[in-house]
Amino acid sequence: MIIKSVKMFIKEERIDAFIEATIENQKNSIKEHGVIRFDVLQCKDDPSSFMFYEVYKNEEAVDEHTKTKHFNIWNDEVTPWFAKPRDRILYSAIVPDESDF
Amino acid sequence: MIIKSVKMFIKEERIDAFIEATIENQKNSIKEHGVIRFDVLQCKDDPSSFMFYEVYKNEEAVDEHTKTKHFNIWNDEVTPWFAKPRDRILYSAIVPDESDF
Image (cartoon, rainbow over all chains, first blue to last red; front, side, top):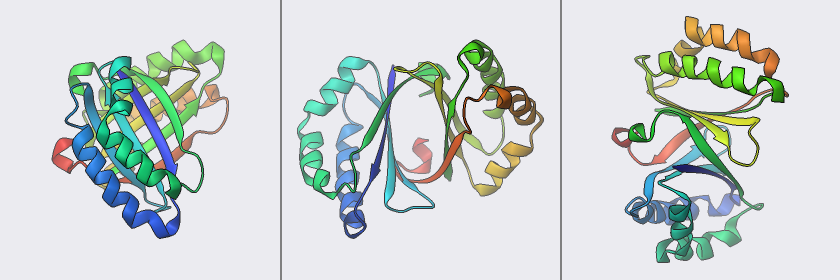
């Protein structure tokens, strides 16, 4: 299991469009065989700041996700809306066990 | 529902002790009535970097957690082990719904 957190800052005038495109991406991503969770979060103190909490079965599933049609449609659409480059970090889970994800 | 991400950087010589104390804290935290998830993650590229992904039913549950005995025992023990101040951010979930957390 591998967890990817992605932090993104979106240009203010694109926040609504970003949310719309991201809901569509999440709906498809969560159906991927190797995707366990795909949580989309918005910062309470700064509505232009978002975090994705993506839980994958393994590293192959992380790679597979970036090759999907829905990811690439989303990525091409939203990348110009980023106020600065996104910040991705990969984690291992200490607790809980995989069965609780 | 409210989500708290907490990023912590731990002094190298305290990493093992931090993990041990944190597993104990997580075991008790996840039993709290208002705690939905309490994921403890370690960065793959930097073993001194950790993230907690804490999902609460509401803001009262966030406050309640910081008043528990287990949180305060953990907090008093590990705070001297931080290499720099922890970074806490509060989020709302856009997707999925609460039932999927």
